[in-house]
Length: 96
Image (cartoon, one colour):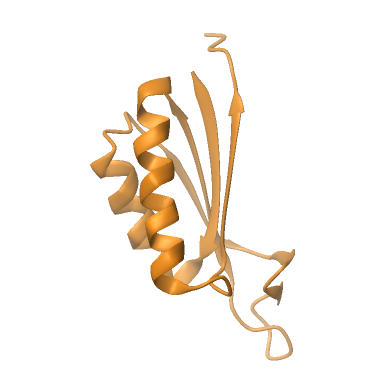
């Protein structure tokens, strides 16, 4: 099992929802209006630093990860490197 953490510009959160659904993710958690600083700059929802991100967390079976990664790569390629999109994948164990 893998834990996938995705951070995307809030304007494109629906794209991530579609990708997770297309990859048969059994479920995910979405946290909206996440503020922070990264490669694309600071986002705090203010006039000085407009915008925000959405954070997605999903626990996926190993066979779901490769198709998701391929679709994320395609999404990134279609939008360019300045698009706010980051994905982190890590091993995890189900405790309960």
